[in-house]
Amino acid sequence: KAGVTQTPRYLIKTRGQQVTLSCSPISGHRSVSWYQQTPGQGLQFLFEYFSETQRNKGNFPGRFSGRQFSNSRSEMNVSTLELGDSALYLCASSWGTRLETQYFGPGTRLLVL
Amino acid sequence: AQSVTQLGSHVSVSEGALVLLRCNYSSSVPPYLFWYVQYPNQGLQLLLKYTSAATLVKGINGFEAEFKKSETSFHLTKPSAHMSDAAEYFCAVSDRTGTDKLIFGTGTRLQVFP
Image 1 (cartoon, each protein chain N blue to C red):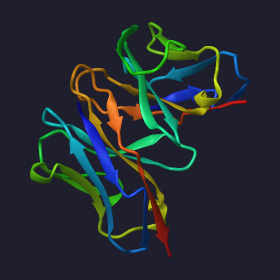
Image 2 (image 1 turned 45 degrees about the vertical axis):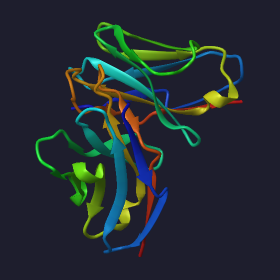
Image 3 (image 1 turned 30 degrees about the horizontal axis):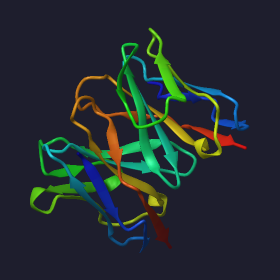
């Protein structure tokens, strides 16, 4: 069974640009969560989508947004990039019922110059 | 609110020695706890999880963890370290207030010396 895939794996952008990251969950999984990992703040929850609806949201500014498609694939978008947005963005999928294990993708490493 | 604290950002052991990575949690409800491992340039891989079925949880790669409610701890152990265990380890608690977002500790980097 294929795991969680994320594209692209690496990305370089400049301040002020916007970026879209993609996540394809494990087949059959309906929940997709996004996390940001930085050396200073560690792993922080961004948001979770389930059946195309945002089910939970972390404490990030409105520049961070996401969506989920009918096939459960998810995208997250960051507008007006700032240097501090440089991070590893991890996507995790699960069946979506309570307390199911979340399976993580390899991440997208974003560098903002 | 749920939180986890990992004591020791770096742990070094010799190959064959005991591995002990510490995690303490704070939770207003019975917690669901996880240990994940992250190898360089990779995502997170689940080692094991505690969901109240048994206090001693066995995971992959010879790791296990014991849930101790009286000590609010969920320490990760492995009897004999292997070079391939060198990685960063994260303890996490599930936020059970609605959905299952994970709240992570700050991580412990494990070094294994030959």
